Amino acid sequence: MREILGRRRKFQLRRGGRSALLGAALQCATEWHWPVLPGVGLRSGGKAARGAQQQRPCGCPDPDCAVPGAHLFDPGLLAATTDARMVRWWWTNRPDAPVVLATGGKAPCAVSLPAVAGARALAELDRTGVAVGPVVATPTRWTLLVAPYSLPELGELLYAQDLVPSSLRFHGEGGYVVLPPSQTGAGKVRWERPPAARASAARSGAPWLPDVATVVDALVEASAGAPGGGSRLAY
Image (cartoon, rainbow, N blue to C red):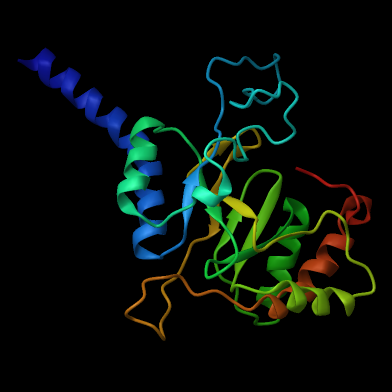
């Protein structure tokens, strides 16, 4: 009996670890009404060189994938949904798949920049008292989730800047962002700033999001001041 219980406990722990991704996907879809879908993920069994950070190859067919595990393959972006049944089906069949948020429309948009620049920008925003929303972090890049913006609105904001570094990315309509607790080739995806409930809208459990206009100046300045002038596109 002890042996059977031990095996059952291990099985439950294994299920619990894998269910973290399903739980995150369901929270996004059903509580926050953010459309999600599974990312391509990493292929198991890869080996790292001695002394190097372990990197497993991407689950896509490209052996030289620049962003292993951190992109879509099948299904495509148009399949993103808030339907709980579809989300459960996806992560039951692919329990280790990254959680991908389809940005734009009524869903959050995002701005991402290299990790060093992201930390600088966040410190400056805190110093000046500018509130930020959820911040997603990997070892290489930080991503600030913001309220939905239109392409013309973004264009006006960027036109007012003297220089917009190429390492600064904008994730709007037709874009996507990988969310925690996903695992990608760049490392673990985590919340640097976890989502906070929207105080002014108790009926909606969706996290509060700032307008992009309130953060873009600090992000551009921090990215431009990063090593290399912010011109190197670090994945």
